[in-house]
Length: 289
Ligand SMILES: NC(=O)c1ccc[n+]([C@@H]2O[C@H](COP(=O)([O-])OP(=O)(O)OC[C@H]3O[C@@H](n4cnc5c(N)ncnc54)[C@H](OP(=O)(O)O)[C@@H]3O)[C@@H](O)[C@H]2O)c1
Image (cartoon, rainbow, N blue to C red; front, side):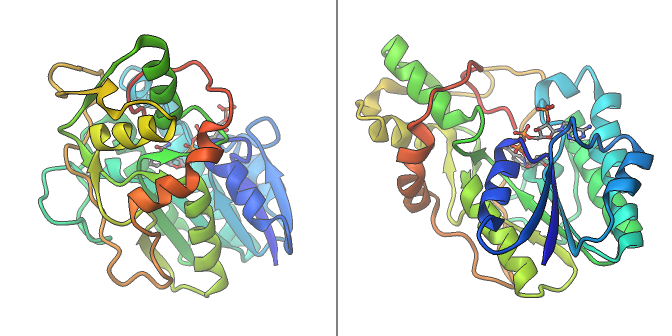
């Protein structure tokens, strides 16, 4: 099978390319090789492939509040460009989306067909991207994920481990609940959907179970060999950010065509050495996407 991966230098993109490395033909394109906003370039590159995996996105959630047009150009128009080109090329498209398309007011897990109601500019542009992909290409797999961490990018666990060590304590919000998900697990899930011939539709690619950022931070700090009590609980009100985050964004895996990703804590423990083993890039102390 011949695959084309966009956003290949991103945190997820790197792991998707790695997941395909052994036995597939992969065209891996970073933003410099293919900018999704350039419809002509997208048309020219999406040829002679069987599957397109879109890992490219404008992911600066807070910055998007002041720059929604740029976020929309990538997350909605860019996704439309890619879906149209994939349809013309006769390739399936796997498009990655986010729990931020939901408002976070639910108290039972969001089903894939639950109506989106984004609260942030980023969430609006990602919801628009989902609709664009569905509208332009019937053979789509729209896969929502959440709270990603991985070795290939700045992420919450790496930042928290660094801050706990440097500052001897860190405040982390305890009133946002979600599903921390390893990029390697999501990459495997996306590839498994395609290999299983999953029907077109919308699926949820997140770890099972749920926790707060505070819960995750305690696990992370323990994995880093530090005292989990270095993590202190705080609230979203006390830690105001430009973009509102869903308070409770737990995604349901009911009906998943392939086995869902395992429990968040067990998956974190499997991932910890790899994710924490690299130098952290500078970033803020709070979840960003
Ligand atoms: N991270 C999370 O917690 C999270 C949660 C839910 C959903 N998601 C979704 O998961 C997917 C992967 O996210 P990620 O965490 O891997 O993000 P990431 O590390 O920021 O990677 C995104 C990649 O897209 C590239 N890109 C930006 N604008 C582009 C454009 N116009 N054309 C082509 N490429 C462009 C970026 O390149 P530059 O760096 O050079 O700009 C970057 O390499 C995205 O769809 C995101 O919305 C992420």
